[in-house]
Image (cartoon, rainbow, N blue to C red):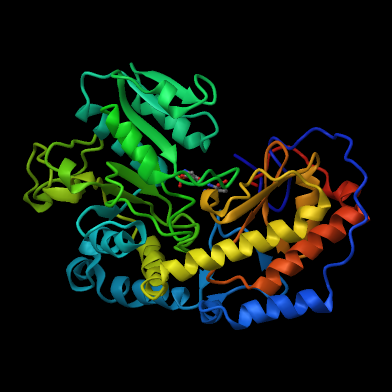
Length: 436
Ligand SMILES: Cc1ncc(COP(=O)(O)O)c(C=O)c1O
Ligand SMILES: Nc1c(O)cccc1C(=O)C[C@H](N)C(=O)O
């Protein structure tokens, strides 16, 4: 078990290395910049959403790409489910409070965020479990092919699941077995699994072009949307994607451990079979038949009883998403990341995040040989981002609750930490074994 996040430091933190002396960069607290960010905030069409979240005083939260913030009405929604639906309604709430329909109903509320027509998205399980289901379903739809393609730098659970679902299959990894995806594709490839936005670098893939390339080689395409849903518009149907999965606890703000979602294109529903054939995916669960018969449609991707209290958190968060204009969201996201890249550029930290906005998700990743200590010093100043081994300072920009002024203040805090070299103080040093 990892130790408590606040009690210890980074697993995989970089060994101490010499860091270059910091360049003498002037303070960002200038009248000119203040006027610029205030004008941007005044013109921000999403600024009213900030008040719909509860965030602690004195915190600049740049980690909504790992765990989203708390929507202000979520506690009331969860309390209602606990006190009324569970406490009073008891078992009747499966019908009367609509519990039974929530996995499909919330899936249909996520659908517009991922560009899916209704009836193709369900909320259930974790992203990892859903990856196992869709990878296996996709492999079964291509029985004559024996290769899974993925990317070496993917979030590790994705790679692990290509191993778990792909027992008996060969695996080819982009960046290890070939420089381009096209080099890895041939008539043996059954499935390609990629992240739409890379968790470490923030690089955004061209979903339409990649999916089309994969289909041209006769394979099926699975996208991991954990770092794109709620960060930018996604167009699953328009890109003719086969399967997709994603988290709801990051940009969607569903709450810690809130269940994931799974998309399967309607054209695959009849032929697709998934391996976790639990009773919630049965055609008639309450017939209590001894044999499994899959439900029609997307319902066959369900497995067991959903975590209702977590679904209540996601349900509350989706009330906000129902109101969000995704075009405005994307424009603000790019304005925030571009501002941060521009203001931190004089600090001389190499960026892993593409400068080209077309290739950028909603995060900025900067490299520093002592990134763990630098991030701890920032967190002490109330600027919460995260560290990704071995040397990445990762900053997530959530357009619903961040202002341009806060982005300037975060860049200024980073400047101060680097110029003062406060991060060298022993209390920021890494010790083994924490959640980062
Ligand atoms: C790209 C990506 N896939 C999957 C996951 C995690 O999946 P799970 O919610 O199953 O832990 C994460 C983050 O934890 C992620 O960043
Ligand atoms: N899911 C997480 C968790 O249970 C603990 C700590 C972090 C996470 C994360 O989500 C990490 C995240 N996917 C990442 O992009 O690094």
